[in-house]
Amino acid sequence: MDLDKARILVVNDDGINAPGLKVLERIARALSKDVWVFAPEVEQSGMSHAFTLTGAIRVQRLGRRRFSVSGSPTDCVLLAASEFLKDRRPDLVLSGVNRGANLAEEVIYSGTVAGAMEGALLGIRSVALSQVTGPDRTVSWDAAERHGADVIRALVGRDWTRDVFMNVNFPACAAAAVAGTRTVPQGRRSAGYEIHRMPPLRGREFYMIGESQHGADVRRGDCDYKAVARNEIAVTPLHVDLTHRGTLTTIRADFAKRKPRR
Image 1: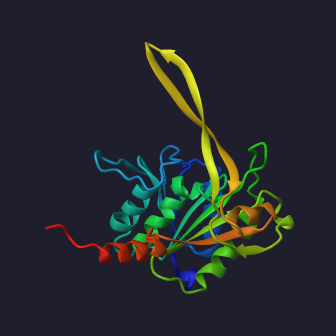
Image 2: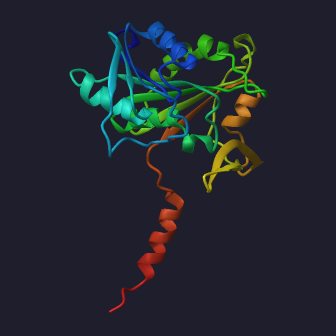
Image 3: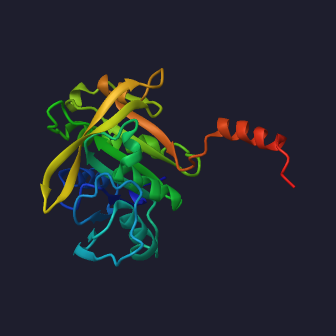
């Protein structure tokens, strides 16, 4: 891909006013002059691949190539690629830069990852980018800002299998302290979330879902969250096909032995 001539679509899940979106816009404009921004009006974190089927979506033009969308990251990609840019679809979708990690099981819930996944489903090369926060949840965008463009250049210089998209996480360290870039599989930890019971209101009970609780390592070997812990940029190829091939083979053989009831 010739990035100088590429049309780049920038989306996120933290909202149109998020600091990470501004970081990604600067990264995208370092790659190409043809950059379009479609981002949710308000934060859509944890929306995963949700999209709007039961209501109208409001789109507001905030600039020549900048739009806010009253929907999810998936809505943003769909509307941009299939309506507003249908004369020439994007060559590359960049989603993020998310405030916080999208590692291991977090990938399942992430609106940032979903934005890139939707791009892949539409046949567009797509990359999700996230900046890991520090222990006190403070965030420095230094690593993403300094290394983001180079990582994207390296990725688009390679051939990707259809339906593959990339998940990139930048470690919570200064750009100068980044130890390199590591291609690693998605991790898996035993996990859960804090549940907070709120004071009752008018006889009804309310709850809030709080911080994620990362448990023990479920899989052996290197993975995304271990890489960022070493101050490495973690790059993980993800796939929209959720089929587990090993189990498919096993149960296919089991059912082949069964005779239908008459």
